[in-house]
Amino acid sequence: MAEVLVYVDHVDGAVRKPTLELLTLARRIGEPVAVALGSGAENTAAALAEHGAVKVLTHDAAEYADYLVVPKVDALQAACDAVSPAAVLVPSSAEGKEIAARLAVRIGSGIITDAVDLEAGAEGPVATQSAFAASYTTKSRISKGVPVITVKPNSAAVEAAPAAGTVEALAVSFSDKATGTKVTSRTPRESTGRPELTEAAIVVSGGRGVNGADNFSIIEGLADSLGAAVGASRAAVDAGWYPHTNQVGQTGKSVSPQLYIASGISGAIQHRAGMQTSKTIVAINKDAEAPIFDLVDYGVVGDLFEVVPQLTEEIKSRKG
Image 1 (cartoon, rainbow, N blue to C red):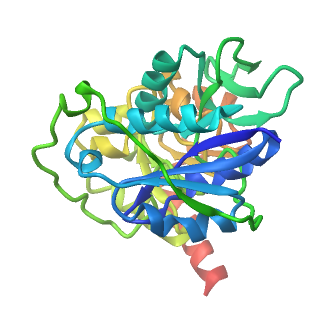
Image 2: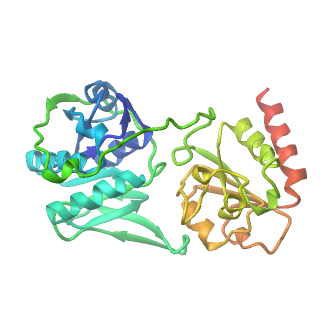
């Protein structure tokens, strides 16, 4: 069976959930071979093996932390040369998509971004994408070179499938461009105790109808009762009510949770582009004609200041 390279997104050896999802998808089209780079790379092997990696290629060097994405592209190119894979899968983060695009140019291959599903095809992997605010679903395959595909978080369930997970050192020679852009400082993200927005199984978002920064505590209360991440529409972010890092939409982050709750959000195309692939969508809005209701699975026509607190209390009472 052909081997499929999976780029590992990890923090000091702790593997992030989107990578485990990629391993599930990779098993549909071949044998997963994970590529773990940087500090703690070897510590990823146990988790990767538990979820189906037959082999783990590792390499650690200061360049991965000190410079931007080019050293990682160099390493993935070296892995492609060593393995001759049937495909390369990368998480659909901002960094992941840049790595994938640069790799595709390097190896002369086509690229598919933001896939939400993956299946084996007679002529290579077939990727499913959602397009034009969920108006269309497309199925595509790459016709030239080794397919390079980025996959949105929450596109597949994480499934344990123990494999050998043999650790092998990857030989990497960095290109002249690897040190072209240096990282000069880092600021740790302030922890809220909530899940990462793009990886969360549940997202609760607020929009213009929240009517103020102080009122976002209502949205946060519902999110905390569900163990959810908090999102915001562009209107709420532009008004300074919530940080840009929490913006969901075309100019913010794309999310694909199991449950998305939109409160006080009208449903402009810009916002829909960032949450259209959510599995179940619930909207709370006092305007019965709001465009968001065209997209939802369940809609509540009502004042969010009455509905959301009642919903929060009901969830707490059922949990408690």
